[in-house]
Length: 146
Image (tube, rainbow, N blue to C red; front, top):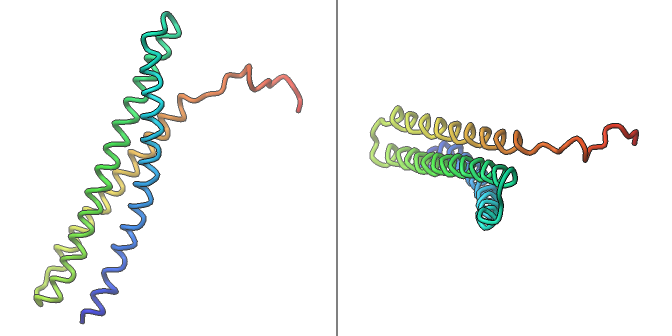
């Protein structure tokens, strides 16, 4: 029955919604990182010495983050496309009356693997970003009791 196929296809569609939300988060992060890198590139020729070294270090860090976010978005898009194939296979199975459930399951497994890979890249990017954003102790004024 086509109604059962629609019910069966709902789970992958919910994963698509989650992927869309994650892509939105990553796109916003990417925009912020790109804006920051452009700002630093403008300052690149205006610095020297230790300040220049710190600026180059941050630009390198941002370059790595841009690369990780880009790969994560690529994996999410591939995951979403694979989920689309999964849903199409479920309907083709019903319409053509052929048994391709294992193929559909295989595509769904690949989609979840791609999603997990993207999430791992997202986690690495966040860890990279936060590991380099330490507030100097002088600003914390730890000697003061507040």
